[in-house]
Length: 231
Image (cartoon, rainbow, N blue to C red; front, top):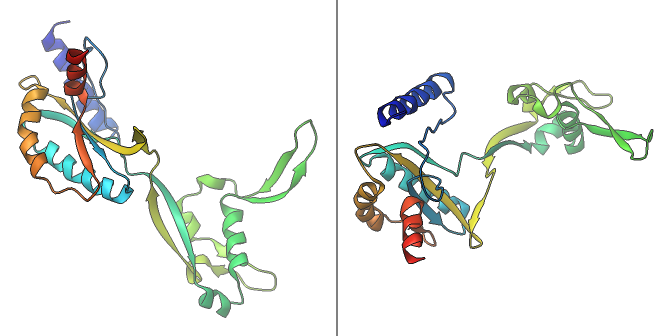
């Protein structure tokens, strides 16, 4: 197929992804010659502190989104893996005759489960765990509905003795030369080249005040081309 057909397929894939899979990013690229790159435009950020690295990534992401000729702007940092953090109010629990162990056991029964023994029917022992049917897949709103129970006590709603805090931890930490990194990536439309985009972004990046200890460098097609010429 010719270039026009390829562009139509790319546009269709992009529109279909946005319509049918709104929480996903569908990247449709043409088959290119030469070494593979994650994206024609790649700005790599390096730093030791994850919070500072995330701040810098969002700042650079905003710059790239405003650049001329870019498509499918994204970052490999992601939002992270969600986790619920349980904060027990000892005073509130005590007023109900409960302690931390009572709260923990009630939550574990509905989520991860409680080890009740070991099955030794074969060569390898298998743990026996008691938990709710959904186990670790229990929804956050169902965790809020947990009733804390203890011998000789009436059930108490979890949120009366504890609070839940949704936090995100990095699902993947990328490293380059043993240093934590993130990348801001973008495709380029047919009217521009990666050199055009980088030429526009370079002075903005130089003027950008990044957190202490965070540096940026250019990757993508520019880095690959430079390595080929130097080789």
